[in-house]
Amino acid sequence: MIRWLGLALAGGLALAAASQPARADEERLTLTLRGGAYDRNDDGYADHAAVFGLSGAEIGGGGVIEGGVRVLPRLWLYASWSGFMSQAARRLDQLRVTNQAFLVQAGLTVYRRERLFGGGLPFSIRVDVLAGGGLYTLHDDLDGASHSARGPGARAGSQVTLSWRNFGFIAAYGLHLARASIEDRVGGELRAGGNEVGAGLSVGF
Amino acid sequence: MQIELTFLVGATLATLVTSAACGGDLLGNEGFEIDCDGRPCDWKVVEGEPERAASWHEGDAGFDMSGEGRVVIEQRTAPFALERRELVLRAALARGGGASLAFELDWYVAGQGEGPTYWDREPVLVDTRGFTVDRRGVFELEELISTPSLEVSGLALRAVKDGDGTAIIDEVSISDPEVLP
Image (cartoon, rainbow over all chains, first blue to last red; front, side, top):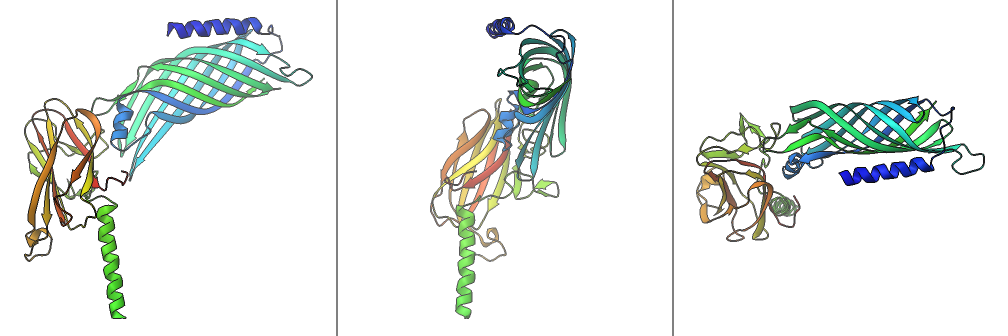
């Protein structure tokens, strides 16, 4: 873990060194809509579900809505909601697992370059690293029987935005650490934390 | 015309019986989900008082044989026709603690007695075969089994749990090994 953090820090510093200086007319607000996948931390729950014919409880599909405001040059404050769901079917039964996160994060633009392709084309690229925390929920339902859990958690991640004028394409990764978990009857546990990857659209003003 | 019709009906029935035995599952209600007045249809508790409520999850019907003492559940199925003697028994199991778990299979041929059902007509027991489950944990059991002959047309399958500990059984099927679950 420390090795990865060290690598991420070194990469961030290198990017920051190569970045163009902040300009006064950079966007102050961003709104992002991403779709993606969430690989939940599984300690037996999803494996047990698969044994009993309900495969696919570990990975969910869903999305993230995120709004950001620039509070200092290259320093952002983000608020986001994310929700992911997985469904596993067997005959008439359906196991549905959903997780949500309501987060507040601080973000740092470690790299930014305008006129990316040269000439007069208004393309820019921006790399941000984010970290923060909030509330996580996890819920499952199988044939009317359900478990729910909620609790605090933290997220650290990075995202790359390729923009044309105010509109951009964004790709993001996030590592979620959360204690909320649900348990099955035979000792398996599924946690709200996990790995999130996604891509989508952003608009900046 | 009548001979052709008789032949057609006979051929259709033979195809249905054969395909049911060779392509699909010999057992019924494999997931214990079909309910007959609070009991799982086709399954009978022979010994003990198992909790039938749930398997790995409260919402998934199964047979929870956990606890102390001996518990035996049974399903009888007949008639069927087999094309091969080798079959595979599959089940989703959870086994822990000091619980032992075994499967017993009584194979029958049709009897000559009178009665409305196969079992009323005094079928003849050909052989009893079975195996003990060695593995512990939560796992998918897949065990090759063989019938004493191709003439068998009835089966009494028993799951036998003894000792003290976790023993949950669900998704029980017997089919051709080449048929994927």
